[in-house]
Image 1 (cartoon, one colour):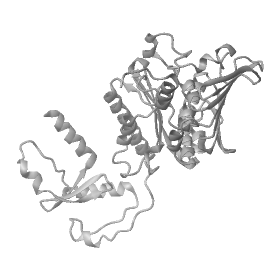
Image 2: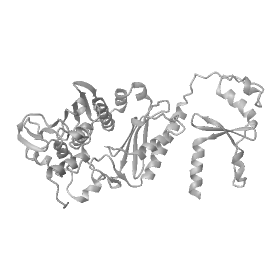
Image 3: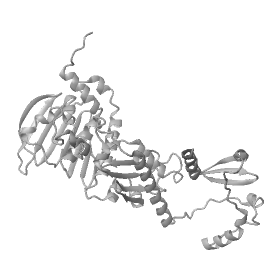
Image 4: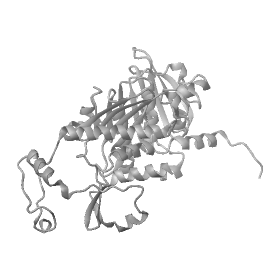
Length: 431
Protein backbone atom coordinates (compact mmCIF):
# COMPACT_ATOMS: atom_id res chain seq x y z
CA UNK A 1 0.00 0.00 0.00
CA UNK A 2 1.38 3.38 -1.00
CA UNK A 3 1.79 6.30 1.41
CA UNK A 4 -0.81 9.03 1.08
CA UNK A 5 -1.70 12.16 2.99
CA UNK A 6 -4.65 11.93 5.37
CA UNK A 7 -7.75 13.97 4.67
CA UNK A 8 -8.23 17.15 6.66
CA UNK A 9 -11.26 15.90 8.64
CA UNK A 10 -9.38 12.74 9.72
CA UNK A 11 -6.38 14.81 10.86
CA UNK A 12 -8.71 17.10 12.81
CA UNK A 13 -10.41 14.20 14.59
CA UNK A 14 -7.09 12.58 15.52
CA UNK A 15 -5.76 15.88 16.88
CA UNK A 16 -9.00 16.56 18.77
CA UNK A 17 -8.84 13.11 20.35
CA UNK A 18 -5.57 14.03 22.08
CA UNK A 19 -7.13 17.05 23.76
CA UNK A 20 -10.83 16.22 24.22
CA UNK A 21 -11.31 12.90 26.00
CA UNK A 22 -14.56 13.57 27.84
CA UNK A 23 -16.83 16.41 29.02
CA UNK A 24 -14.39 17.47 31.75
CA UNK A 25 -11.75 18.03 29.04
CA UNK A 26 -14.08 20.53 27.37
CA UNK A 27 -14.79 22.27 30.67
CA UNK A 28 -11.08 22.48 31.48
CA UNK A 29 -10.15 24.07 28.15
CA UNK A 30 -12.99 26.59 28.37
CA UNK A 31 -12.16 27.52 31.99
CA UNK A 32 -8.51 28.04 30.98
CA UNK A 33 -9.71 30.45 28.29
CA UNK A 34 -11.80 32.31 30.89
CA UNK A 35 -8.78 32.69 33.18
CA UNK A 36 -6.57 33.89 30.32
CA UNK A 37 -9.29 36.44 29.52
CA UNK A 38 -8.90 37.81 33.09
CA UNK A 39 -12.43 36.79 34.07
CA UNK A 40 -13.54 37.38 37.66
CA UNK A 41 -16.87 35.60 37.23
CA UNK A 42 -17.20 32.14 35.64
CA UNK A 43 -20.44 30.18 35.31
CA UNK A 44 -20.44 26.51 34.26
CA UNK A 45 -23.57 24.55 33.41
CA UNK A 46 -23.88 21.02 32.04
CA UNK A 47 -26.54 18.40 31.41
CA UNK A 48 -26.29 14.61 31.37
CA UNK A 49 -22.75 14.87 32.73
CA UNK A 50 -21.83 17.19 29.85
CA UNK A 51 -22.50 14.62 27.14
CA UNK A 52 -25.45 16.58 25.76
CA UNK A 53 -24.86 20.17 26.89
CA UNK A 54 -22.07 22.31 28.33
CA UNK A 55 -22.18 26.08 28.82
CA UNK A 56 -19.30 28.19 30.12
CA UNK A 57 -19.78 31.97 30.51
CA UNK A 58 -17.40 34.64 31.78
CA UNK A 59 -16.98 38.40 32.12
CA UNK A 60 -13.51 38.44 30.57
CA UNK A 61 -11.97 40.53 27.81
CA UNK A 62 -13.85 38.77 25.01
CA UNK A 63 -13.09 38.17 21.30
CA UNK A 64 -13.58 40.88 18.67
CA UNK A 65 -16.14 40.19 15.93
CA UNK A 66 -13.50 40.00 13.17
CA UNK A 67 -11.60 37.23 15.02
CA UNK A 68 -14.52 34.86 15.60
CA UNK A 69 -13.77 32.68 12.56
CA UNK A 70 -10.02 32.55 13.01
CA UNK A 71 -10.47 31.64 16.69
CA UNK A 72 -11.64 28.21 15.48
CA UNK A 73 -8.70 27.75 13.10
CA UNK A 74 -6.07 25.32 14.31
CA UNK A 75 -2.95 26.91 15.84
CA UNK A 76 -4.51 30.38 15.94
CA UNK A 77 -3.83 32.14 19.25
CA UNK A 78 -3.40 35.58 20.82
CA UNK A 79 -1.10 34.26 23.57
CA UNK A 80 2.12 33.42 21.74
CA UNK A 81 4.10 35.56 19.30
CA UNK A 82 7.34 33.62 18.78
CA UNK A 83 9.06 30.37 19.72
CA UNK A 84 11.19 32.30 22.24
CA UNK A 85 8.08 33.01 24.31
CA UNK A 86 7.33 29.32 24.94
CA UNK A 87 9.93 29.08 27.71
CA UNK A 88 8.44 32.04 29.58
CA UNK A 89 4.73 31.65 28.79
CA UNK A 90 2.45 32.24 31.78
CA UNK A 91 -0.98 31.92 30.14
CA UNK A 92 -2.99 28.70 30.51
CA UNK A 93 -3.31 28.22 26.75
CA UNK A 94 -0.94 28.97 23.91
CA UNK A 95 -1.22 26.17 21.33
CA UNK A 96 -4.36 27.41 19.58
CA UNK A 97 -5.92 23.95 19.60
CA UNK A 98 -8.66 24.02 22.24
CA UNK A 99 -11.53 25.70 20.37
CA UNK A 100 -10.96 23.94 17.01
CA UNK A 101 -10.66 20.58 18.79
CA UNK A 102 -13.92 21.13 20.69
CA UNK A 103 -15.66 22.26 17.49
CA UNK A 104 -14.44 19.17 15.58
CA UNK A 105 -16.27 16.74 17.89
CA UNK A 106 -19.41 18.74 18.79
CA UNK A 107 -21.77 21.55 17.86
CA UNK A 108 -20.58 24.91 19.18
CA UNK A 109 -22.11 28.33 19.66
CA UNK A 110 -19.88 31.17 20.82
CA UNK A 111 -21.08 34.67 21.70
CA UNK A 112 -18.54 37.33 22.69
CA UNK A 113 -18.32 41.04 23.39
CA UNK A 114 -15.20 43.12 24.05
CA UNK A 115 -16.87 46.40 25.01
CA UNK A 116 -19.10 47.77 27.73
CA UNK A 117 -21.87 48.16 25.16
CA UNK A 118 -24.14 45.20 24.41
CA UNK A 119 -22.86 44.73 20.84
CA UNK A 120 -21.60 41.17 20.49
CA UNK A 121 -20.76 38.69 17.76
CA UNK A 122 -21.97 35.09 17.46
CA UNK A 123 -20.57 32.12 15.55
CA UNK A 124 -22.16 28.68 15.13
CA UNK A 125 -20.28 25.56 14.06
CA UNK A 126 -21.36 21.97 13.40
CA UNK A 127 -18.58 19.41 13.82
CA UNK A 128 -15.94 21.85 12.61
CA UNK A 129 -17.91 23.52 9.81
CA UNK A 130 -18.88 27.18 10.24
CA UNK A 131 -22.63 27.65 9.81
CA UNK A 132 -22.88 31.40 10.35
CA UNK A 133 -21.30 34.47 11.91
CA UNK A 134 -23.59 37.33 12.87
CA UNK A 135 -24.15 40.16 15.36
CA UNK A 136 -25.75 39.36 18.70
CA UNK A 137 -26.33 40.89 22.12
CA UNK A 138 -24.63 40.21 25.46
CA UNK A 139 -22.60 42.06 28.08
CA UNK A 140 -18.80 42.08 28.01
CA UNK A 141 -17.32 38.60 28.08
CA UNK A 142 -17.78 35.27 26.32
CA UNK A 143 -20.31 32.42 26.38
CA UNK A 144 -19.55 29.06 24.79
CA UNK A 145 -22.26 26.40 24.41
CA UNK A 146 -21.22 22.87 23.42
CA UNK A 147 -23.83 20.25 22.48
CA UNK A 148 -23.85 16.65 21.21
CA UNK A 149 -20.28 15.87 22.27
CA UNK A 150 -18.78 13.10 20.07
CA UNK A 151 -22.01 12.97 18.10
CA UNK A 152 -19.93 12.38 14.96
CA UNK A 153 -17.76 9.77 16.69
CA UNK A 154 -20.14 7.08 18.05
CA UNK A 155 -17.32 4.76 19.12
CA UNK A 156 -15.74 7.53 21.20
CA UNK A 157 -19.07 8.51 22.75
CA UNK A 158 -19.71 4.90 23.74
CA UNK A 159 -16.49 4.95 25.75
CA UNK A 160 -17.75 7.77 27.96
CA UNK A 161 -18.58 6.69 31.49
CA UNK A 162 -21.99 6.74 33.11
CA UNK A 163 -23.62 10.12 33.61
CA UNK A 164 -22.98 9.90 37.34
CA UNK A 165 -19.27 9.22 36.80
CA UNK A 166 -18.92 12.09 34.31
CA UNK A 167 -20.67 14.45 36.72
CA UNK A 168 -18.26 13.48 39.50
CA UNK A 169 -15.29 13.94 37.18
CA UNK A 170 -16.57 17.42 36.29
CA UNK A 171 -17.04 18.30 39.97
CA UNK A 172 -13.55 17.07 40.91
CA UNK A 173 -11.97 19.19 38.18
CA UNK A 174 -13.99 22.33 38.89
CA UNK A 175 -13.26 21.99 42.61
CA UNK A 176 -9.53 22.18 41.87
CA UNK A 177 -10.02 25.40 39.88
CA UNK A 178 -12.13 26.86 42.69
CA UNK A 179 -9.37 26.11 45.22
CA UNK A 180 -6.66 27.38 42.88
CA UNK A 181 -8.49 30.65 42.12
CA UNK A 182 -10.32 31.78 45.28
CA UNK A 183 -10.41 35.33 43.88
CA UNK A 184 -12.71 34.22 41.02
CA UNK A 185 -16.44 33.82 41.55
CA UNK A 186 -17.62 30.40 40.33
CA UNK A 187 -21.15 29.14 39.84
CA UNK A 188 -21.77 25.52 38.84
CA UNK A 189 -25.12 24.10 37.68
CA UNK A 190 -25.81 20.45 36.84
CA UNK A 191 -29.11 19.42 35.24
CA UNK A 192 -30.76 22.61 36.44
CA UNK A 193 -29.57 22.29 40.05
CA UNK A 194 -26.93 24.55 41.58
CA UNK A 195 -23.94 22.57 42.81
CA UNK A 196 -21.88 25.40 44.27
CA UNK A 197 -21.55 29.18 44.07
CA UNK A 198 -18.51 30.92 45.52
CA UNK A 199 -18.13 34.58 46.41
CA UNK A 200 -14.73 35.21 44.81
CA UNK A 201 -13.65 36.97 48.01
CA UNK A 202 -10.29 35.18 48.07
CA UNK A 203 -10.99 33.61 51.47
CA UNK A 204 -9.68 30.04 51.62
CA UNK A 205 -11.42 29.44 54.95
CA UNK A 206 -14.72 30.27 53.27
CA UNK A 207 -13.99 27.85 50.41
CA UNK A 208 -12.96 25.04 52.77
CA UNK A 209 -16.24 25.52 54.63
CA UNK A 210 -18.23 25.34 51.39
CA UNK A 211 -16.42 22.37 49.89
CA UNK A 212 -15.79 20.42 53.11
CA UNK A 213 -17.06 21.72 56.46
CA UNK A 214 -16.38 24.46 58.99
CA UNK A 215 -14.48 22.10 61.32
CA UNK A 216 -11.94 21.32 58.62
CA UNK A 217 -11.80 24.95 57.52
CA UNK A 218 -10.81 26.10 61.01
CA UNK A 219 -8.17 23.40 61.42
CA UNK A 220 -6.20 24.00 58.22
CA UNK A 221 -2.57 25.03 58.71
CA UNK A 222 -1.18 27.86 56.53
CA UNK A 223 2.04 27.03 54.70
CA UNK A 224 4.53 29.59 53.39
CA UNK A 225 8.17 29.22 52.44
CA UNK A 226 9.71 31.49 49.83
CA UNK A 227 13.25 31.08 48.56
CA UNK A 228 15.18 32.52 45.65
CA UNK A 229 13.87 30.03 43.12
CA UNK A 230 10.80 28.48 44.78
CA UNK A 231 7.72 29.79 46.53
CA UNK A 232 5.52 27.39 48.50
CA UNK A 233 2.16 28.71 49.66
CA UNK A 234 -1.10 27.12 50.69
CA UNK A 235 -2.88 25.16 53.39
CA UNK A 236 -2.58 21.63 54.76
CA UNK A 237 -4.80 19.78 57.21
CA UNK A 238 -3.61 18.90 60.69
CA UNK A 239 -3.03 15.26 61.61
CA UNK A 240 -6.53 14.91 63.08
CA UNK A 241 -8.08 15.27 59.61
CA UNK A 242 -8.06 11.97 57.72
CA UNK A 243 -9.44 11.16 54.26
CA UNK A 244 -9.69 7.71 52.70
CA UNK A 245 -8.19 8.74 49.34
CA UNK A 246 -5.65 11.22 47.97
CA UNK A 247 -8.23 13.01 45.80
CA UNK A 248 -8.13 15.96 48.23
CA UNK A 249 -4.42 16.59 47.65
CA UNK A 250 -4.22 19.60 45.34
CA UNK A 251 -0.83 20.78 44.13
CA UNK A 252 -0.69 23.60 41.58
CA UNK A 253 2.34 24.98 39.75
CA UNK A 254 2.22 28.68 38.85
CA UNK A 255 -1.57 28.51 39.26
CA UNK A 256 -1.79 25.68 36.73
CA UNK A 257 -4.10 22.78 37.49
CA UNK A 258 -1.91 19.84 36.55
CA UNK A 259 -1.34 16.17 37.33
CA UNK A 260 1.96 15.50 39.09
CA UNK A 261 2.34 12.30 41.09
CA UNK A 262 5.80 13.29 42.32
CA UNK A 263 4.59 16.38 44.18
CA UNK A 264 1.56 14.51 45.50
CA UNK A 265 3.94 11.88 46.85
CA UNK A 266 6.08 14.59 48.49
CA UNK A 267 2.99 15.80 50.34
CA UNK A 268 2.13 12.25 51.43
CA UNK A 269 5.72 11.72 52.57
CA UNK A 270 5.47 14.81 54.76
CA UNK A 271 2.72 13.06 56.72
CA UNK A 272 4.70 9.81 57.02
CA UNK A 273 4.34 8.42 60.57
CA UNK A 274 1.89 11.24 61.39
CA UNK A 275 -1.08 9.60 59.65
CA UNK A 276 -1.94 5.92 59.70
CA UNK A 277 -1.26 4.17 56.39
CA UNK A 278 -4.29 4.41 54.12
CA UNK A 279 -5.28 7.84 55.41
CA UNK A 280 -4.60 11.02 53.45
CA UNK A 281 -4.60 14.75 54.22
CA UNK A 282 -6.43 17.66 52.64
CA UNK A 283 -3.98 19.97 50.95
CA UNK A 284 -4.03 23.02 48.68
CA UNK A 285 -0.52 23.97 47.67
CA UNK A 286 0.65 26.39 45.01
CA UNK A 287 4.27 26.24 43.90
CA UNK A 288 5.66 29.42 42.35
CA UNK A 289 8.56 28.88 39.96
CA UNK A 290 10.29 30.92 37.31
CA UNK A 291 8.53 29.95 34.03
CA UNK A 292 11.93 29.09 32.54
CA UNK A 293 12.07 26.15 35.01
CA UNK A 294 8.99 24.64 33.35
CA UNK A 295 8.28 22.85 30.11
CA UNK A 296 4.54 23.12 29.63
CA UNK A 297 4.67 21.98 26.01
CA UNK A 298 4.69 18.27 26.94
CA UNK A 299 1.21 17.22 25.82
CA UNK A 300 -1.60 18.97 23.90
CA UNK A 301 -3.93 18.60 26.89
CA UNK A 302 -1.47 20.62 29.06
CA UNK A 303 -2.26 18.31 32.00
CA UNK A 304 1.40 17.43 32.43
CA UNK A 305 4.52 19.55 32.70
CA UNK A 306 8.22 18.92 33.12
CA UNK A 307 10.12 20.73 35.85
CA UNK A 308 13.82 21.36 36.21
CA UNK A 309 15.40 20.35 39.55
CA UNK A 310 12.33 18.29 40.42
CA UNK A 311 14.11 16.35 43.17
CA UNK A 312 15.18 19.51 44.98
CA UNK A 313 11.63 20.87 44.80
CA UNK A 314 10.30 17.52 46.06
CA UNK A 315 12.60 17.77 49.08
CA UNK A 316 11.65 21.39 49.82
CA UNK A 317 7.92 20.62 49.64
CA UNK A 318 8.25 17.65 51.99
CA UNK A 319 10.43 19.51 54.52
CA UNK A 320 8.27 22.64 54.51
CA UNK A 321 5.04 20.77 55.19
CA UNK A 322 6.52 18.44 57.77
CA UNK A 323 8.19 21.21 59.77
CA UNK A 324 4.94 23.20 59.80
CA UNK A 325 2.99 20.15 60.94
CA UNK A 326 5.43 19.41 63.75
CA UNK A 327 5.55 23.06 64.88
CA UNK A 328 1.77 23.32 64.78
CA UNK A 329 1.21 20.19 66.85
CA UNK A 330 3.94 21.17 69.32
CA UNK A 331 2.44 24.63 69.86
CA UNK A 332 -1.10 23.32 69.92
CA UNK A 333 -0.19 20.75 72.58
CA UNK A 334 -3.46 19.03 71.83
CA UNK A 335 -3.47 16.02 74.14
CA UNK A 336 -6.67 14.00 74.07
CA UNK A 337 -8.50 13.67 77.36
CA UNK A 338 -9.81 10.27 76.35
CA UNK A 339 -7.46 7.53 77.59
CA UNK A 340 -7.98 3.89 76.75
CA UNK A 341 -8.29 1.72 79.86
CA UNK A 342 -5.58 -0.91 80.12
CA UNK A 343 -4.93 -3.65 82.67
CA UNK A 344 -1.42 -2.97 83.98
CA UNK A 345 -1.41 -5.91 86.40
CA UNK A 346 0.41 -8.12 83.89
CA UNK A 347 3.19 -5.70 83.04
CA UNK A 348 3.81 -4.59 86.63
CA UNK A 349 5.33 -7.99 87.40
CA UNK A 350 7.76 -7.70 84.46
CA UNK A 351 9.07 -4.17 84.97
CA UNK A 352 11.37 -2.46 87.41
CA UNK A 353 8.46 -0.41 88.78
CA UNK A 354 6.76 -1.78 91.86
CA UNK A 355 3.46 -0.21 90.90
CA UNK A 356 1.75 1.82 88.21
CA UNK A 357 0.98 5.27 89.55
CA UNK A 358 -1.52 7.87 88.38
CA UNK A 359 -0.37 11.46 88.01
CA UNK A 360 -2.39 14.64 88.29
CA UNK A 361 -0.01 16.76 86.22
CA UNK A 362 2.72 16.42 83.62
CA UNK A 363 5.33 17.87 86.01
CA UNK A 364 4.74 15.12 88.58
CA UNK A 365 5.15 12.50 85.92
CA UNK A 366 8.38 14.09 84.69
CA UNK A 367 9.90 14.09 88.20
CA UNK A 368 8.99 10.47 88.76
CA UNK A 369 10.23 9.35 85.37
CA UNK A 370 13.60 11.06 85.81
CA UNK A 371 14.19 9.10 89.03
CA UNK A 372 13.48 5.78 87.35
CA UNK A 373 14.85 6.20 83.86
CA UNK A 374 17.82 3.95 84.62
CA UNK A 375 15.67 1.02 83.50
CA UNK A 376 15.42 2.50 79.99
CA UNK A 377 18.49 2.43 77.79
CA UNK A 378 19.09 3.85 74.34
CA UNK A 379 20.23 1.09 72.02
CA UNK A 380 22.98 2.38 69.71
CA UNK A 381 24.89 0.36 67.16
CA UNK A 382 28.42 1.34 66.22
CA UNK A 383 30.46 0.38 63.17
CA UNK A 384 32.58 -1.94 65.37
CA UNK A 385 29.64 -4.10 66.43
CA UNK A 386 29.49 -7.59 64.85
CA UNK A 387 27.43 -7.68 61.65
CA UNK A 388 25.29 -10.58 62.85
CA UNK A 389 24.04 -8.57 65.82
CA UNK A 390 20.84 -7.68 64.02
CA UNK A 391 19.89 -11.34 63.72
CA UNK A 392 19.47 -11.50 67.50
CA UNK A 393 16.64 -8.97 67.18
CA UNK A 394 13.22 -10.65 67.38
CA UNK A 395 10.39 -8.81 65.63
CA UNK A 396 7.22 -8.54 67.72
CA UNK A 397 5.06 -6.24 65.63
CA UNK A 398 4.30 -2.71 64.50
CA UNK A 399 2.56 0.11 66.35
CA UNK A 400 0.36 2.63 64.54
CA UNK A 401 2.42 2.21 61.37
CA UNK A 402 5.05 4.39 63.07
CA UNK A 403 7.13 2.20 65.38
CA UNK A 404 8.69 -1.25 65.09
CA UNK A 405 8.46 -3.30 68.29
CA UNK A 406 11.02 -6.01 68.96
CA UNK A 407 12.92 -8.01 71.58
CA UNK A 408 16.69 -7.99 72.00
CA UNK A 409 18.50 -9.87 74.77
CA UNK A 410 15.30 -10.03 76.85
CA UNK A 411 14.74 -6.28 76.44
CA UNK A 412 11.98 -4.61 74.46
CA UNK A 413 13.14 -2.34 71.64
CA UNK A 414 11.09 0.46 70.07
CA UNK A 415 12.39 1.70 66.72
CA UNK A 416 11.22 4.92 65.07
CA UNK A 417 10.28 3.57 61.66
CA UNK A 418 10.62 6.92 59.88
CA UNK A 419 14.06 7.62 61.36
CA UNK A 420 15.22 4.09 60.54
CA UNK A 421 14.15 4.49 56.93
CA UNK A 422 16.07 7.76 56.67
CA UNK A 423 19.17 6.06 58.09
CA UNK A 424 18.91 3.24 55.54
CA UNK A 425 18.72 5.78 52.72
CA UNK A 426 21.69 7.64 54.20
CA UNK A 427 23.78 4.45 54.34
CA UNK A 428 22.90 3.70 50.71
CA UNK A 429 24.20 7.11 49.68
CA UNK A 430 27.46 6.49 51.57
CA UNK A 431 28.19 3.34 49.64
